[in-house]
Image (cartoon, rainbow, N blue to C red):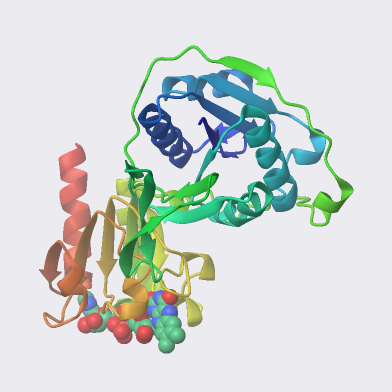
Length: 323
Ligand code: FAD
């Protein structure tokens, strides 16, 4: 047995969720007393590649092919599967990110592997059984699933596993691949950024607003709170449906599922469809003027009050704390 981790990057920099996945993969390799290889695809510099060493990779495969500069689902899946075969890896780990969720089943097919997406804990290996705890039903529940296949693909939920530093001195090898025409049916030509703000799926803190905020003009205070906390902004579905906020911020069953350390819900009632997207959050803080709002049933901390009074006070308190 050996383990392969796909080290996802954004603009040549590894994401925090990548370091979590490397730490997680290191722990799986240690469970099996085996080695961990990381594979990076795209234009990642040597210094950045070396950061993977800190989290326990024994070897790093670097793929820098012009055709693979930008993420292409089919082609990346083929390369990762090829690397797994070459390394004799029977466990492939990736982050359960937007691209990871697309890659996992494709790699699974290529390796005839069982696939777990949304893993939230290390596998348990007892009496030949390999089980993994994962989120289920859009985050409304957890399931422990047994993988009985020889090969396994596991996509780790961001923010669910702690980054652990382990000193290693890995070899960095170029991994050259012939990209098949059939894998390049979809080509990402350009990325146009709509914002430079913290990316919502990777955010450690999320400040989210609902219909209780009355209108888009009232988002300035949430933006200010988010910027003070280094947080991403999010919203409920009716807010994005009404065009108060972009759809990319819509959280829930039909939007993005987030798993931050802190989720601050302001003027959000806590409908089941919204909760589906936030249930993996470590700490939920709710601000709502209705003490009976369902959000308080899942909140770790609740403030019953008018958002237009509470949020400015919170901003003032954070500013005072910071000075
Ligand atoms: P509301 O339910 O209107 O709640 C507003 C809250 O603000 C209330 O609790 C109120 O007490 C509070 N409030 C009002 N004024 C203030 C104030 N001044 N200060 C503080 N609090 C105040 N919803 C999602 O969010 N995500 C989804 O992915 C999603 N998917 C759906 C899929 C389906 C198939 C369906 C049927 C629905 C879906 N919904 C989704 C909609 C969901 O059912 C709710 O309607 C929605 O989440 C409610 O949004 P809200 O909490 O912003 O608004």
